Length: 110
Length: 114
Image (cartoon, rainbow over the protein chains, first blue to last red):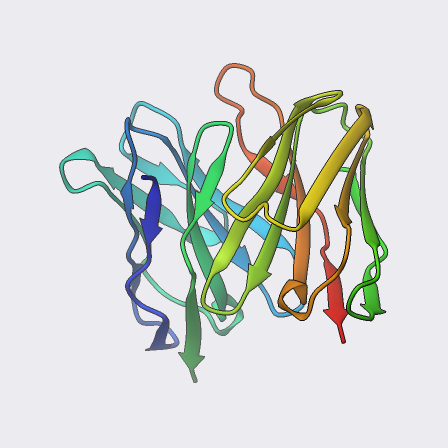
């Protein structure tokens, strides 16, 4: 069965520190992979996506993610976090039907 | 931003009443989706559509039905609302051509069933 695991429910980092959010998936084949961000009371905004090719993908707002086939992972990274990055982040996988992780809430300390 | 609207944006209803949520797109995308979002569960797919009159179930379809009579509209119906259906409902659209198979989300509908 398809599933997406985001093992960290909450993460707190200091402003300016680096960030890594983890995502592991279970799927029959290598699916399309996505990271979305959601601010409180808002809809979801696409940060980045992986379909094929280079396993390191760049997204908006300075985020990047690396696909590792051997680990079935698609971790999101940012070298220096800004206070405005505080939000909830969702990993998603699929083709025409998409499966989402349960999300990671990011808090940023001043 | 993709042209997706949802109506109503907020609704409070009573247990046992029927409820219909509407998703409208102006992008002419083939695929449309209904998700519900609950704390600790992320987004879960309720139903999706891959064309006019073509729909399929997602992982949490019990208690919900959908219809798509036009490309631009995808309706989600709760035949008899229950308190467990209190949630935030998101509509999404996508197009599958070449590598552009990402989803665009609507603003959400907050439904409260008393």
